[in-house]
Image (cartoon, rainbow, N blue to C red; front, side, top):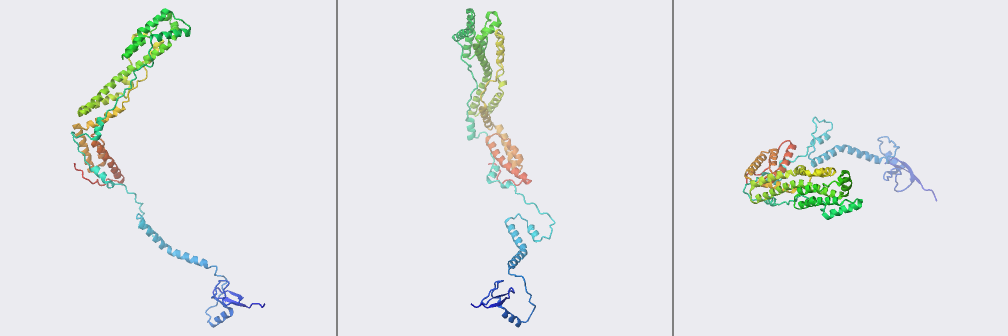
Amino acid sequence: MSAMKMTRYVCSHCGRNFEAEEKEIMECPGCFWSSSVKKQEDAEESVSQKPVLSKKVSVPFDFSFAFPFVILIVLAGGLFFAWPHLQSLRLNSLHVKTPHLSLKTSESIAKPKEKSKTQTAPPTAQAVPSAASITEEDKNILSRRVQLTADRPLAEQEQKILSRRVPFKSGSIEKLPSQEWTLESFKKLVADQERVYRVPLPKSYKNKLEALFKAKYLPAVEAFKNGDELQARNLWVDSLAFPIYANDVRKHRGVVLTMIRPFINDTLSKIGAVNTMLVERKIRDKEKNAVGDYEKLLKAIEAKSWKEGSEIASGLQKRLAEFSNPDQLGGAPDSYPDSIHQVDEGIQQTLGGLLGGPPPAIADLEPIREDVYAKKKVVDGFIVENLNAAQAKYNEALDLIANKSWAEAIDKLRTLETPMALAEDAQAKIRILKKMNEASSSSGGQTGAPAGNTGRR
């Protein structure tokens, strides 16, 4: 096979000279253009026919590889010149969406060389609620004027308070800590202890013990059952004055007092319980007086005798206040009878300690105390003098509201506790006035008064 004929070509685009087999369409191996590739001899003829304008300078560098970088440089330059216009458009859009931005901001960016002579104002603080922000319902409450008379009918809530009856439960504990002894149980105790200690007591001495038991202990039981606690206690004290055994105090304590110790301890516990009852009896008398006054109060309310009911309620409140200190309320129990000196000295010391026992239990009077307080507030509201004084304070507070003196109006309204209708309306106004007063203080001054008619209705 004969060798293919090679032809030299030149590219007018990149200036490359190369040799290749002759083809109808030839691409430049440097820039891959085909329209700029010609045979070298054809290119020389075209050049020779044209006037030479300038000397052709060969470019040793292949510009095809630098083409992407040229594009990047062009884009960067365009962005550089277009940036101020884009920034201005962005600030204009922010200015539309957020009105609190100052126009000076965009001007300072558009003219960076100009220095502002004045400082930019700080951002506007959030608006504080003012009196104008209260609701229509609030305005109606503030403009509302309540006018009462002494002969008005009872409101539903007033009727509910006055008709309520609180039950009273006493704290009294009027019972003995154990069962009473009988003559048979006492004789059995002595016989059992004789066997345990193996010390038989003389018949004559046991007869003396039984005679003392029948003369003092059993009558004490009957006195207690009949409600005479003081007489019962004194007789039980006398029942402990045992005759001296064998006329020897040491033998008496070591034998007799040791053998009948269960009976002695049980009798001492009864004496201690009765001492507490004697103190409680003074408290129970005061409890009964308080209950009696409470019944009188209910009758006065039923008859609508308001002044009488108010006086009874005031006295009852003083009585109930005494129950806050039970130690002083009951005092100390009555002293023992002189016959206590016939009792053994050791037992006497124990009896003396029983006089200073713990304070007695008292009734839970808090429910009745609260009920009397509520009733008195309602009753006082129907007394003409109290009603007129309260109505005057109420009207003065409304005048203060009209003059925008909200703090003074609050102080005036706080003094209203009765009648109930005025007190409730005062509390409703106070809640609104507090909000308005705080808003006014935060904004540096009072704003406009609420709209509404403050005339009498």
